[in-house]
Image (cartoon, rainbow, N blue to C red; front, side, top):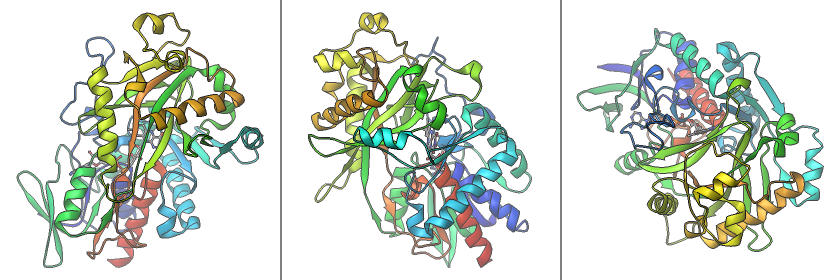
Length: 456
Ligand SMILES: Cc1cc2nc3c(=O)[nH]c(=O)nc-3n(C[C@H](O)[C@H](O)[C@H](O)COP(=O)(O)OP(=O)(O)OC[C@H]3O[C@@H](n4cnc5c(N)ncnc54)[C@H](O)[C@@H]3O)c2cc1C
């Protein structure tokens, strides 16, 4: 079976690459291979009733399938070069911003119209943060919400399915180079193509490492972010979230001068499990539809850990910490902030007596048995710093879920076309280590599609 272009992975990177290629070169034969299910078949079995926590499905419907890790996400498309990846280092800031805006236009055309774009530009919170040793990062953010994000994906799929061959539940096992062509192997079949785009996301990190090893593509491992997800009554952050929706705030700790940052803020949202390669960590999302709102806001507090020689396995370090929480709690652990600072575990009773109703069924426990002291101290310092701009953050009943780990794929050596040392092999999205977000991953897909289009 022969294709002009094969795309591995149908997350935002793969979808937008397919979209732009099909638009620019309708004559091209394009195949998209996806390890997970088609969109309508993606269903996490956790129902809060019969299945309360992660049962480690073979293909995690939260992380894999059409839409990738973004399908049930909050659908926050941040248009910024300040965070979300380093695409701008390869293609320049103006180009990166232009592509992110183009992705936004497509999302609006495919069902996102009517959703709100928030911006930090000109906000009073810049000053308030600076006065309290906090830094508010600049961004515009389109909040699609989990519900509208799903509709956009459905519409994109319907528009693409006639132009592109999709293979779901079809993991690509390996990629070989033969006579200048790429051979993509699935369980039963080999497919040949002239150009190959790998967009396998975080869930494909181990697979990507193996491909780089087999094809001698240089990589460098970088960092892992470790922390907790904070959940508190939405009113405590509503002055910020009503105006900005998501505020990315950075704090430099006094004790160790580490940078702690807020990440993935979900006003009126819910905390959820995330399963990466069998390890259960925590994440969050929220719906655009007010009827699906909860009374809480959640966000992550993360500390970035960079390693130097001789240690190279930053993801392994993050996994070990997450495994420890899974070992102690059978999954994610939840603790009241008041219990943490008093040095005692939380119990079912203490959580029930608190004023914050948890939106995720997690095991009450003690995060100080899981998180390294330096990281925990940084998180506690940041909670007190946030309390100054959002009083109530440091309340005893504020819930902390652990652990939240942001695994970063090792950075693959690619050029300004996001093409690796093998001509015609492009590596994009979170799987390349270049992006860590919906908007950057999507923009990287558009970028390679245009580069391929120019070269055929
Ligand atoms: C719960 C949750 C909420 C999030 N919320 C946000 C948010 O609000 N805003 C934001 O910017 N980011 C968010 N993110 C991160 C965002 O989803 C990712 O940055 C983005 O999806 C990356 O896109 P991608 O295409 O690079 O990879 P992915 O979306 O991870 O897609 C990769 C796809 O490749 C497939 N794949 C992997 N290996 C193979 C293989 N060997 N063969 C075939 N297919 C393979 C996978 O199954 C997957 O579907 C969230 C993530 C999660 C998990």
